[in-house]
Length: 536
Image (tube, rainbow, N blue to C red; front, side):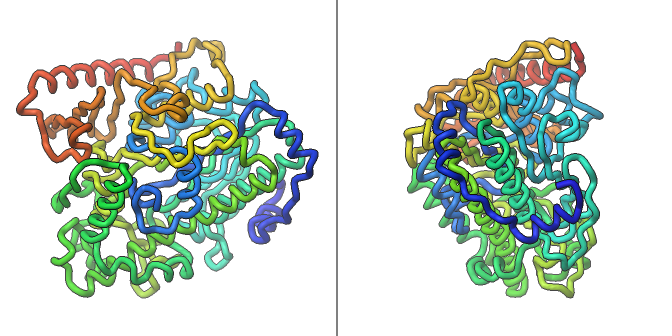
């Protein structure tokens, strides 16, 4: 695609399909190296998908879980850009200047394509980028094709998006564009080109959706499927999700309590929310029975939009998986699905602002999920996106690979972190990374390959798992987790084997353990910042 006209043509028409021939199937069967499809959702709660206990229809994700493995204790970095830095570099965001974000990555930092391309891989990117100071995806990021969506405030009419590092015109409202579909369209286009021109080579595709990140905007037909589902309220939804998760063995802790006084510092005040949105908006996670009837109706509508966004993402994932099947590549593609952080309690108004006269979820509305429904989406855990309590950092991880993964429908309780996924990809591809990059020595990757845990649970031990975002701090060593909400907040200590929902703070009973873990966290934090400052 060399022109904007061509871009819109394949996006609108769905692109004419090509049928994989018997020759292509035979060629792929001979190839040993697997393909990789890394799918990232944006602000999706731990329990939103059906396979994780949610009531939202996610049949494609559920089939990946039923025919692969489903992890229960894998962690993000708690926010969009640090999590994506971990995924693409294999380092903690603090090691590569991404949290807090600096002007660029260290010279020695590589992205996934820089490891894979020397081994013959073609590399593609579709969707969100959001790595401050990182190279453009194609120019120096190593991707062969990219559709980069930089506009986080509009699902129907993005103003900033790029194709192969070249800016595209803003999309007009009413054009038929919807971001989730456009991202999948680009992925399908890349895969079809790959089948036609590069069928003898393996591929890596980073499919980075912006859904269900605010604003809550969805196709009306998708919203209509959920309009009445959430009138029962967030308390009932949390209870039913928790019961399903417990019955499936995903969690074994008690359901955490709502925390009405906790919300992001940058949220609009309650008075301002009512002024700009209306009296249906609710600024705190209070019990559902304390809401007025108008508030209940409005809040149920909001969650219906959130569900619709995830429903649509699952449908678009299904189209991409169908493309893999038509190419004969489905069986030999390692599919990984994650969410970049927990659901968001944020409430703000950006983009084109909010028009209260239009239907919620339509292009001129700007609504956020808020702490009530965010608490439900993150069931059974505490807190939200940007915190490093479990609700902010617990991520689903699905792994599906028919040719190489015999397990079907099994849970994996092995703890892990996003920094473990790049080493796993290199492990499965049979790649040993060079110790230098751009003539600079490269520090050892932060993570450990999770690949052994794909086949055998509890096979990948970690010395520690580290977290730090907006002065929210945590470290996990074994079953112990030390966590603090902000630099002024006290250290809290939890035994996650018995209390994954962080309900029983043991800091007072185990002061020596608090001091031990706090010192380890401080040492790693100091070392990571020293590494970020180094160019050699």
